[in-house]
Image 1 (cartoon, rainbow, N blue to C red):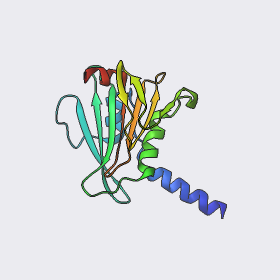
Image 2 (cartoon, rainbow, N blue to C red):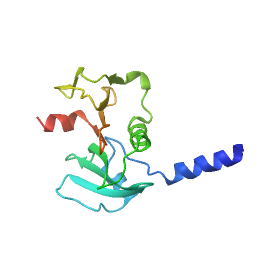
Image 3 (tube, rainbow, N blue to C red):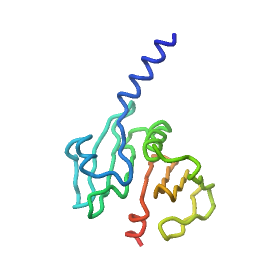
Image 4 (cartoon, helix red, strand yellow):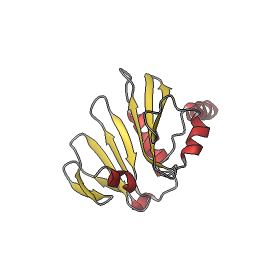
Length: 158
């Protein structure tokens, strides 16, 4: 039984895309995923991935140094966005960073990141890690999406 479970887990992990993370060089992201399926401007690029329920739209926005400063994952058209999709993305964003540095913001509470003030929405799961420089927002209402941004991206959108 253990061997069957281990084989199943390895197959699932091997088939899941290894999302990049904020601050990673775009050149590394391109090596991993290949040429973007879209490049609407000089900074933003996107790839499409399949999950069990359809296509997912993965977007990366780069800064002038070629580093990712924002990444997002959302369902494409009628695809279902699952908690597992969001949790995998979140896990990759925070991989290697101590959990003790993260703050989970309750809905309705104000928080500050990148020099700006925000309020956590009723259908949002917000995690802030100032040390890692990551603001993560998981929008749980349909159709759902998850976004990770750096302080640099927040400052550019002022």
